[in-house]
Structure formats: C-alpha cells, structure tokens
Length: 70
Image (cartoon, rainbow, N blue to C red; front, side, top):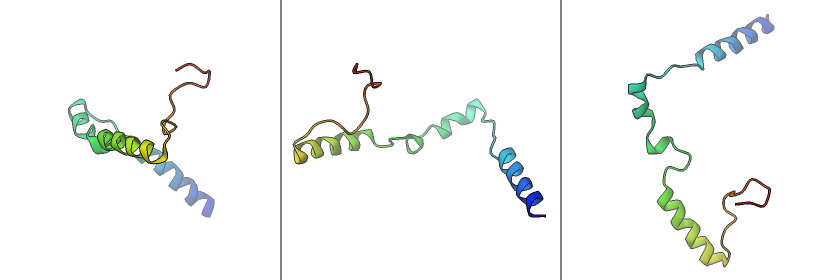
C-alpha cells in the first residue's frame, strides 16, 4: 500500500510541476526579484567595499572556463 501511494505522489508532482506560460504573462514573471542577482548595483558596491576591506580584488565570481582564458 505505501508503494502505491508514493508512486501516486511522485506522478502527481511530475504532472503538477509543468506549466505553460503565455507570452503576455512572461513580462509579469520577468521581474527583478526573479533574477539570480536582483540588486546588481548593491552587489557591485559590496564587492568594492570587500575589496578595499580585505585588500584583495576578485574571486567573488567565476570568469573563465577553466582553460586559463578570460
């Protein structure tokens, strides 16, 4: 009995996780709060303050692909 209920819950989670978003509604979802970095100005200021405080610049984000090229 528990296996059937777990299977049902798993299948329902797969079905309910999919949604089609109309093109007219995509503007509502594309707000600043939905971005990975919703406050880029504040992040740049914090990185600058951190670089002066720690006397080191960089290392807060990945730039290259690991091959040595930027």
